[in-house]
Length: 456
Length: 109
Image 1: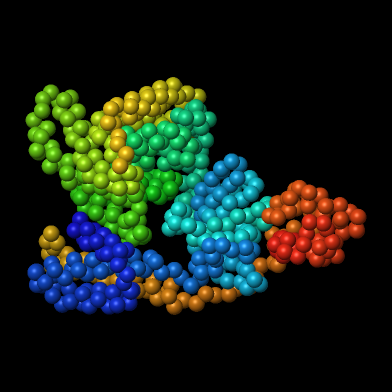
Image 2 (image 1 turned 90 degrees about the horizontal axis):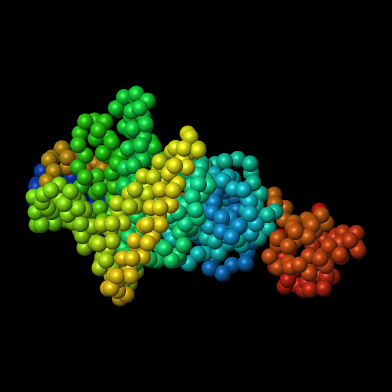
């Protein structure tokens, strides 16, 4: 499975760097597939031809993702445009408030301009001039100018629309959103409300990032210091959070006396809801797919292979959006886990960490090796994208990761306890505030060490 | 590396074939599917009625500021309303290019 993902990734990268056309490549893939079927019994021929086929399939996936349907909104708009468009559709993301002005992704369905009316598709980013109570899935007809976005906004945003008057945003009074996503956003809003009600602004911002993946409320200075120390990964929802959610779900269902098989099914459902609530980012999708396979393995009483689970997670993400291969979050997330899966056992054998006694020293040594293995793999990516090199990362992570684990556990406990016993949640508040203060001060201490980080 | 049994190879090739078919169907739909035109929305949707709009509604239109909104309301009161959007030309501060810019957002009922 790992090799299949490797060849697929190479194919995607090839199509990204070299200009090739869809149809000739498609016929090559078809011929290779037919040849593979014919020579299925020939070991050597299959082993040569099948990787070639997967490589070309990867290239095809990327080429196909570049082609937009004729009804796509980007065919109607330009970079500079004063034409007023009327668009019908629904809010496809969680609305954000910035300086009292809401913004959200809007899934377009119909479009009208210059007295012509079209069916259309694609998401646009909408900025409303005045605050309005909005929710995911709400159907609207909007009127305003739309222009094409620059690269900065990512792949998903096909246009930017500014609606200058409240009269230009007419609610259709119905909700077109997916019920599962509506539930996910409802739970997320409640959890966020609890976090911000109970904690100080700084602690709430950090906990919001750790538990729900919302980083917009973290002060720049804190985020910057964590980037320099190489500890910023704790602010991203990842495998650990998914593991905590799965454990909590399984434990609560066990208390209710539900059978093991149904417990696993319900835990999978909880993970999918959590994945949607945290914004379906690459790290959380990877962790969710891996956890789902682990739980599915428990259901059918088979042990999940971590390498295959990781490869399958990559395969799913790349099939859905091959352009994710070039996103920083995908590269960092997969390289970190790949380092733990492939490099860490080799380092463990090399340093003979399993023979260290007493047990507590062995655990500390293994923690260092995990940190070292992820650092060795990700330092190249960090240097390339962020233009700095942080030798302090390994040391900082040894102290910061356990502290972040504590904060995340306290954060989840705070939210769950506050839902059933609001005043009981207050017991967690001082601990979280203390841990967050400790985390920030410890991080600042590490980046003040000599040669903690170097700009390239 | 790719040490698959013959049964496993059949399954992998079947899935690969399905993926290849999916890619070409998706490509065909995007490449050869025609952009459909559908019935239009109400023409007045999202437009501000000059004869009933308050200052706040007028200020919501890009290109109309505090002073211009005040002048529009004063003109409306003095002339018992607007007969058409073109009447705005009679207001100081609105020339042809300005009118062209804001008339998309305005209506007279």
